[in-house]
Amino acid sequence: MTSTSDPAHPFATEGTAPWEPPLAGTETEALLGALDRLRWTFRYKADGLDAAGLAATVGASALTLGGLLKHLAAMEDTTFGTKLSGVPLGEPWTGWGWDGSDDWELRSAAEDAPHVLCRTYDDAVARARQRVAAALASGDMDQRVHVADGAANLRRLVCDMLEEYGRHTGHADLLREAVDGRVGEDPPDGWRPVS
Image 1 (cartoon, one colour):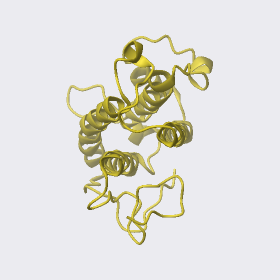
Image 2 (cartoon, helix red, strand yellow):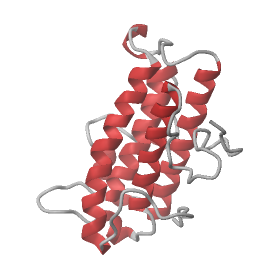
Image 3 (cartoon, helix red, strand yellow):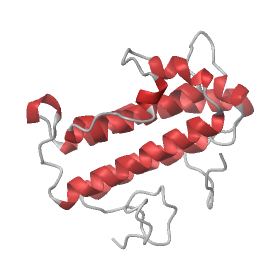
Image 4 (tube, helix red, strand yellow):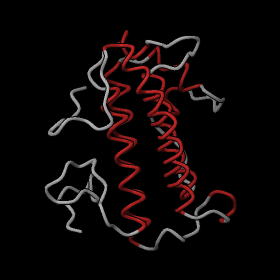
């Protein structure tokens, strides 16, 4: 596999969209490529909306795209910071007064401007990519992580995030289609976030 020169997307194959996982990569390349594809797809679903679009709901559910942006940002920082190496959440979470309760980030997102939610998400993904790359520079997917007193490995964290994104990207599909009809599995060729 020939990776791109863009360190933010190390598992994209040269000449392909950055969200395209390798066709025949190693286990690490396949897992992280699949995670990045879900990240890109989720970000595409949440992109370019105003506060009303990010606050839209479907049916009886209270889920919003804004809430999911903030929730997945928190999951990135928790999983690839705290669970990976014991790094406390820190900013922006402490400044926001996160109380650690279930769904706080989903409920509190309505108070945040769209550009803040998008930047928070983008920054958390960038931190997660850097933290995973640093961990892989000194070990592989079998390396033990901080959570569960070292009983878990990095592979488990990546698989947990794949599950988290799989669930919430499906939610984002429904929410975005209800807002303006945007559908599709992958962003169109050449797409980059505008918000």
